[in-house]
Length: 328
Image (tube, rainbow, N blue to C red; front, side, top):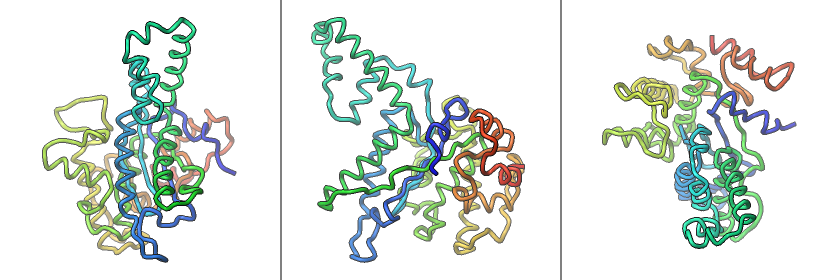
């Protein structure tokens, strides 16, 4: 039985979530159709463009992503504080920048029209602004706006109707920094694990390719939540050092390529960062290869997962025994 979304996404416990969407029957609806030979690779660019549009409008930052041929991975950060700082005008403008029916935006932009509204109409506008503010910090609405847009375009192009994506996207709550780091690297390494990329630089439609390209010009991507850098303290970043992240993902990618997609990394990944964050080499092999399958809908230390379990008032929480072994 599917887990209720209200149990999977609890913003009081964490703002970080790993979300996965899969095409129906896991067909290659964004890649090359093996039966017809037709190539739908360009649809991955649709997804990337829409992702950028939504991250600019919503109070949700993209930390990492990998757009594959028949599924997609996202690591998202919900910035509720940012959403609460917006005025009603900005909320409505942001909502209608990615949704149709811009009547409300036009009313707000035209002062004469807005002042002509009676008190009841103004109250309605403010009520709608409260609704939109909540939606702009909702992962469910973010994913709906993302996947629905691609499905409509693809079905129109294919002259057909019906589902493009599986009905529900999967989400995993990332409760601490080790969970966030492990998940981001797992997501960024998707093309290499799948055998469709031979380096991080040619891992197309991934956040790591975008980060590496921007680093060459001396900055981090504006449409991704930044990683921490020296001499630039900021609360609006992922609490993981950019330099350490790049070192770890490069060495892990190198080992994956050497082992030619084996089920485990046979050679240990030797890096100081692993000792710092308390993950041993065997555990890192599991995380970098099978993060999604190793955990259910909550990922973190045993203590953090136990707190999450108490919030849900559940007797058990799948994955706690695994967490005890991996996050020592």
